[in-house]
Image (cartoon, helix red, strand yellow):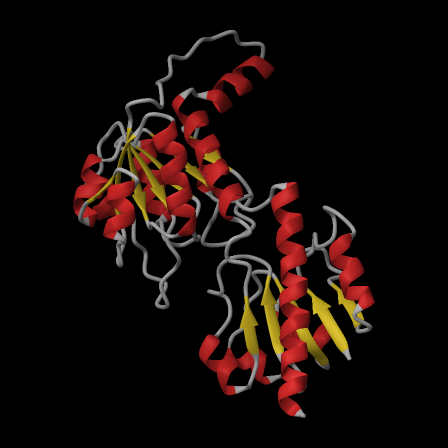
Length: 312
């Protein structure tokens, strides 16, 4: 029996995840391409596998239907947007994830992005490397109105970090926890009010099933001209073309993105000064990533064991 491991950097943060896999007695098939696999590559490498430790590759109904022995998909990450859950259930495939693993790492990167935007750190660094000694005035984080779109695990962690920094917090969620919001001093508002009031808008929602763009030209026009936007959630939630226009026209002061509609990203945002771009680093902190990898292996082996017990 074989286990397919698709994340290209799996095991780089420490040996324990691989040790757990090797001790399980299964044949281990790693990703030889060192990049995100296509659906055909996933099937080719793992056609006879019993389990997959999955990254962000697309596991839609057609892909899942091509496996004959697959029983478990263990997502290395919090979201399962790339897995067709209905199809998985139809084919008797258990789907697990590591929902808490990336929470702190993504929240801390959000804070870092906000600080970098407010203090113009990337611009200062670029100037210094060009031999330009220029002090561009920044802003304090303390006292800023921070809006959080999506108050799930990561959104709540961001709220707590921002509250500790002395920010004024507002938030919007489709299913808000009023008690939590009151306790943590997050004023719940409607979506249009979140856009209109936020000096810094942090996005932490999952992509909807129909891939709806939540922040497009209309929404960006509703924001303050001195506002900054940080998207740490999913690529495609923000219309990148509309964002380019808003940044060029200075109807939005700045933006920071860690996720994109198509990755690797090589689009026009790379040519704009008042935007910070990172290559999907949200959970990419060594200690957090190691803990997630261990959990993903434990989830996989546990579910395979349960499947075997159920078959006896």
